[in-house]
Image (cartoon, rainbow, N blue to C red):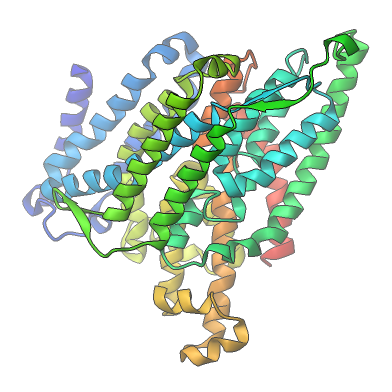
Length: 491
C-alpha cells in the first residue's frame, strides 16, 4: 500500500500547476483532464485481463487489493488537484451509480440463488438450447442478472458429465446475460437510464426485430456447435444418458423468491415512475428520495429471501457469495477509475476525446461507438452520453422526445418541432440502445452478470477462458453478427 501511495504522489507531481490553482472550482473537469488521466482505468482492466494468466492463485486472493490500489492511484492525485469538485465527482458516482448498481445486483443474486430447479435434465443440444432460449426471453422481464442467476446452475448441472462446456457458458453469457435484456428497461441498466430520461417503458419493445434476428442466429449456431461436441462425447464413450430408474421429474423449489424478485423489479419500476420532487442531500450530492426507497426495498427483498428460503436449498443450488463479492470489489475500483473517462466523453467537443463524440454522425456510427465503449466502460453512462449528444446535435430536448415517443409519427407535427429531426433521433436512439445492450457481451466487464456467470461456472469446474480468451470468442462469433446487424438495420 505504501508503494501505491508513492505512485499516487508521483501522479500528483505530474498534474499541471493550473489544476492546483483552480482547485476544480467552477471548472468542467472533462474539458481540462488530460488523456493520461485514464491510465488507472486502463491499469485495472489490464490487471483483470493479465493477472489471472500470470498467477491465478495470487489473483484469486489479492484482486480486492489490486482494485483498491488502482482506485487510490487515481483518487489521491485527483482529490489533491481538484479539491471539492473531485470529491463531489467521486461521491456522485458512488451514490448515484455504484451503490444502486451493486445493491440491485445483490438483490437479484440473492433472490435468484434461492430458486432451485430439481429433476433430471440431460445436457443434450435440445435441452441446452431450450434453457438458453428461456433465459433469453426472461432476461427482459426479470433482468439479465435475475435470469442468469436462476438458470446458470441448472444448465451447469445438466452438463456436468460433458467434456466440453465452455461454449455453453459463453453462449449463455451472450444471450441470457446481455442480448436477452433488450426489450424493457428492467432488462439492462442503459435502457432503464433511458426510461428515467423520458423514454417510454414499452418503447424498447421496438428493438424486437434486432433482438430476434441475432438471437435466432446465435441459437442456431449454438445448437450446431453443441451437437458436434455432444457427438464427440458420445463417440468417446462418455455416459450422457440417464437411466430410466434414475430419472427425477422436473420441479421448482423456493418459488417464494419469485415474489422477492418481483419486489426488486417493482422497486426499479417505481423509481422511474414516481417522482415526489425532493431528494436527500449527502455532502452536496442530491440523491432522489425515490432512489433511496428503491435501494431500501431491494435490500429488504434480499433479506426476506434469506429469511424465508431454507439454506439447504441454497446449498443444493451450490450457492456461494464469492461471485457477488468479486463483482463488488472489482467494480468498486472500476467505478472510481472510470470517472475521468466519462467526464472527458461528457465534455463532448471540448474534451480530448472530442473526435470520438464527433465521429458519431449516423445510425451505424452511433451503434458501433456506443457499443465498443460499452464493452469496456459502464454501458449506462455511455448510453446517456450519446443520448445527450444526439439530442444536442439535433437541437432537441428530453421533454420533446418524451412526448414524441408516446405519439405516432403522423402526430409529431403538433409538437412544433422539425419532424425530420425527430425521426432521425429515433433512429439514433435505436442504434444507441442496441449497441449498449448487445455489445455488453463483448467482454467480461461489459455487463455485471458476465462476471458472475463466469465465476459460478469456474466454481463448477468449467475452465473458463481468460479475459482476452473470452474476447476471442466474442470477436469470432459476435463481431461478424454485429456487422450483419449494421447492414440490415442501420445502413
